[in-house]
Structures are given as C-alpha cells and as structure tokens.
Image (cartoon, rainbow, N blue to C red; front, top):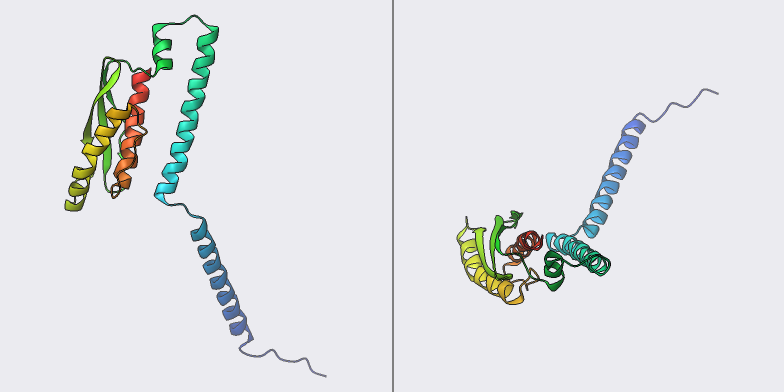
Length: 175
C-alpha cells in the first residue's frame, strides 16, 4: 500500500490555527493586564501611604533616640512638630497636565506662607481649575501646618502634586 499524501492545504490550515490561537492568547493577556493596572491616583495613594509610613518610622526613631540621648533644641523641635525658620523649595512634581512646585516660608517655627512657583497653566481649563484650587490648598496647608491637606475636587492631580511638593519642602524644614 502506498503512503498517503498529505492534504495540500494542511500547512496553511495549521498556520492559521496557530495565528488565531496566538491572537486569542494575546487578547486574553491584554484584558487580564488591564484589570490589574492601577490608575495614577491609585499609584499616588500607594506611594503616599509608603511615604507616610516612612515618616512615622522616622518619628518613632526620633522619639526613642530622644529618650536615650541628651535632648537638644533640634530634637525638641523635631518632636514638637515645629519647623526651622527659613524658606524651603519643594520638589518639582508631575501633575499630568504640568509641573507643580512650591516654596514655603517658615516664620516663628510655623508654616507662614506657601507659594506656587509652577503649576499647570498652558490650557485655559488648567488655568481656571488651578485658579480656584490653589488658594484653597494654600489656606488649608497653613491651617493644618502640614502637607496632609484634603484634595480639591476637579483638581485631583494638582492637589496630589501639591501635597507631595509641600511634603518635600516641610521635610527640609524639619532638618
């Protein structure tokens, strides 16, 4: 008996089957990756929570060091929450629509003034939103004497970048 000849289009059918299977697998991977991606706001919250945990650890170490070593004016300032007088520049933070950077002024060991050096302003919508949000952010920061301010609805990215830039400036004011 003679050997059977393969179907002439079998290689094409096999190739198409592999292509379709690869496409389905790629689509499945894409869908499953989209379900696990985090938004910029979620990424900020994760980073901010880690930052706050680090600050808490630093404060805890400062308290334990203060109880075992002679106290100094600087240690007492750090523990009491007071800042060192001066002007401090915050980090430049990407707020999606532009950069946010602030400068703080500390007087009498208290946050006296916050100034926006940069903020998203290249679009009319950004100018309007930030014109409304910036005074609120500044006012609350001075009132609470920290970077833990409530975000302004509609200016989420600016609010988050403000908090991060302010926090970096206030860390300098504690050293």
